[in-house]
Image (cartoon, rainbow, N blue to C red; front, side):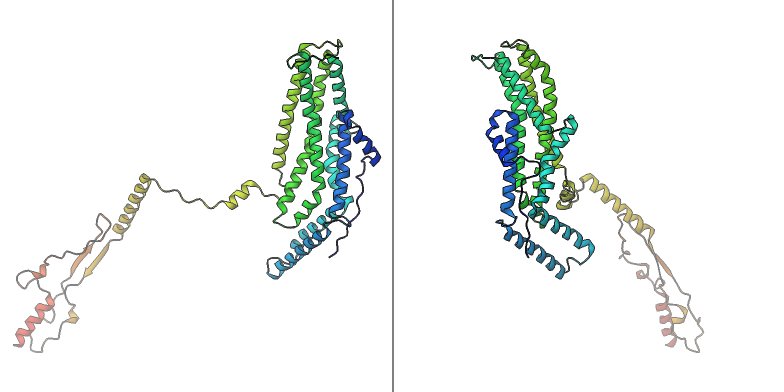
Length: 417
């Protein structure tokens, strides 16, 4: 299998190498210059890293070929073992996955158009739409931050004796907090986003196999998180800049003299902005954690239900167990009482069973049959009691309680004598 990779080029819309060189050398000129330098360096690093991975002549082209061969071999084995079938339902997602992985791992044009523009350009464009800026909202915001620091420098003057709790000290503390919440968040997010985009082709290839697909979804979630962070930072920072405009006007009303209330107000603006950035990061993390990445990440509830064993039945309470036992015994007693047996036992022989009498016998031709009815009923405890083993009526004195059959046989014997 041969992998065809395309050559890399700088991302569309990024500065030329000469412009990037000038931006990097002027990075200390202000917040806007620092952000332009970061964007230039990120674009160069991302393009160079993509070319060294899976592009034409890249180091990992052979690894990509091996992984694609294993992917096809595993599918063939699943066909041989009957775990998969040659149908549209099974072939379509596999072919789509294979095509997308090859496209984004080997073509810099496709990768830069989709991944780079969505991660870098889309949040900036959306922020410009919401703030009404025709250009780059991030660049405009950085320019406003430079204006704020120029006003603070003008208000502080040339005073070198500054303590932490003096008006000048509180003003500069507020400026440091404001810079940490704006420039610090923006620069950190841009650098981390550039690193993730540069490593993107490796994680895209991991989407081929089920065992490594979790790394791909984690990379995609991190990419979205770092793309949303600058958007929230620019929008929230724009609001805080609008709140700081009257405070800066009060600070620069008298050059060289700083009003204490205005200095305290600007310090509170910086502290609130830092707290707001922490809240923004927390909200963005919560939003991304709930994303299922187009169904690739199962829900936590479904995952816990499938992994957790079935709960064992809770043991019955003693009182409940006793009441259930009494109810069962009562039900069994009632059934046995209703289904009481009634047995009729014939204690004598029937007329046809007696031996034939002699011809000259003048006695009765047959003896009347005597029937004894015995009833067996259920006892109170649900058990059938056996018949009494005591001496019966037939075991008493005399012969009148003996069976009629025995009495008839004896009379016949005496007549024969």
